[in-house]
Length: 225
Image 1: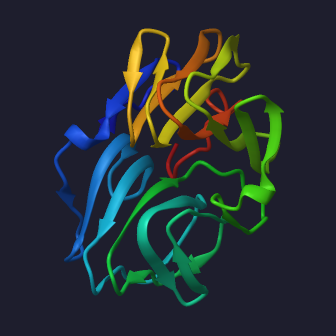
Image 2 (image 1 turned 120 degrees about the vertical axis):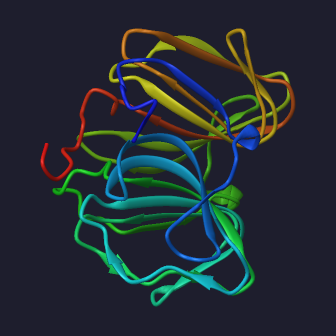
């Protein structure tokens, strides 16, 4: 399956307009933003766990990165409430479930094996943010040789200047409304701007963005590639 699989091309998805697609396990469904592969895939998805649902134990051969959008996601390592950003490195494993139900943004097969850092960060902790200018604060989440991951918090009316990001940029709207050039984005919209093209954002309301940049031209191979 290929959905926006060519990372040299721009992409924009209004995820709230997508149908929920059932996964192989009961109670777990997905909205696919990008995907290259079958059940083993390089993927960015929004995944919903119904109350009481679970996923079988599995190993993250390409790593796993997720942000809890609502509810509480759990596994044998702990409980992760709304606003928790998690990185489980290549080779890690777990058995996830959700007692109350939850929704997460999850990325698979997008980590370099050399990055073995575990990350658990509360993006709602205001003390973790650095103010870059009036109305724009940034929370650095992680950085390696492949990518930089941040949360941008914008006050209404604040603009992030136009810039061409080496290696491209990917933005997911955690909350609020922003314009990206001529594109109007709202909560849970996702955009990808490849290397060499410019990106800018202006907040129409207070907004929080999950931002990744520098990574689009550094593809982590899938099995068999």
